Every structure is written in structure tokens, then in C-alpha cells.
Amino acid sequence: MKKILFLGLIATLFVSCEQAEQRYFGESAETATLEAGIAAYESGDWDQWRSHFADTAKIYVNSTEAMSLDDRVNQLSGMASALADYGFDKDDDHIEMVLDKQDETWVYYWATHKGTFKANNKSLEIPVHLAVQFADGKIVAEHVYYDATEMNAEMAALAAAAEAAESAEDDSGDSPE
Image 1 (tube, rainbow, N blue to C red):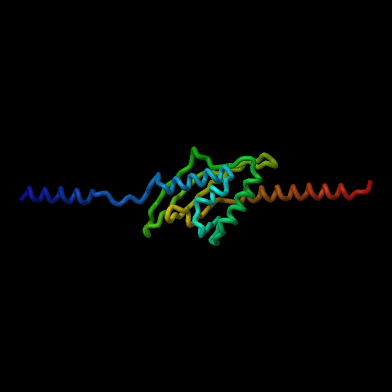
Image 2: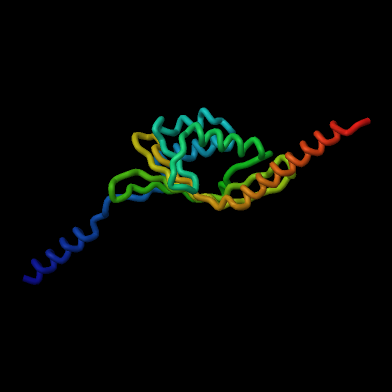
């Protein structure tokens, strides 16, 4: 009887120790796709960046309202044109893929975005979080979260300085000689 009880206990132990389905991944085809998209962003290759998205992708940047892929490319390329250099700190980034309760595939990315403005050589470092949903190997939704306060203030200051310089130039051209 003790042997049967012991065998039953061992069987129960093996069954309870059985591994659950893996739902978190440090590396996957989707994490590689997101990393390739980040590399395309950092090099300003907007066609390559766009190739990682489904045509119907929805992009949310600090908002619950989606923007189109074209609008996001215009936004990113405009920002990039104001910067002498930009990109993510790869020494301190984190990426993971998760299969959620609905078996949707999400990749999460945390990193610090660094950039230097061309006009005044000012550097910014902004923590960024991406939550990216994949279907059939393509990005179908991207949620971008960061504190835009410092970036927006610097862009506004640069725009005001450019406007003031233009106004001063116009005023100097109108003065009688």
C-alpha cells in the first residue's frame, strides 16, 4: 500500500511539474522585425521602416487616436531632419515578446531615445516605451509612449528663433538706405 501511495505521489509530482506553455520570449521573429524597424528608423530609411507594417496598421503616439502610416512617416522624418543624430541607447534597452490571453502577439520595447539638435547642438534623452502588436509577421498596431514635454519645448523654441531671425531679416531688407 505504501508503494502505491508513493507511486501516486511521484506521478502527481511529475504532472504538477509539467511546464506550462511558454508565453514570454526574449527573442523571436517578431522581436527581430521590431529591431530591424528600429534600425531603419535610426538610418532614416523610411521605405524600409514602412515595410515592417501592415497596410492597415494603426499607430498611436501618446494618444488614443490612431494616425496613418504616412502621417507617422511625415512626423518622424520631420523630427529627424531637425536632429544631427538620433537613436536608441542599445546598451540599456529591453525587448520581449508576449502571447497575451487572447493569443495576440505583442512585442514590448523600452529604451532611452537620444538626439542632438542641429540648430543649437542641444542633446535630449527621453525614455520611450513601444507596445507593438503583430499579425502574420507584420505590425498591425503600434503604441508609442514618451514624455514629449522637453522635445516639444525645444522644437517650439527653435521655431520661434527661426521666425525671429526671418522677421529680423525682413526688417533689415525694408529699411531705407
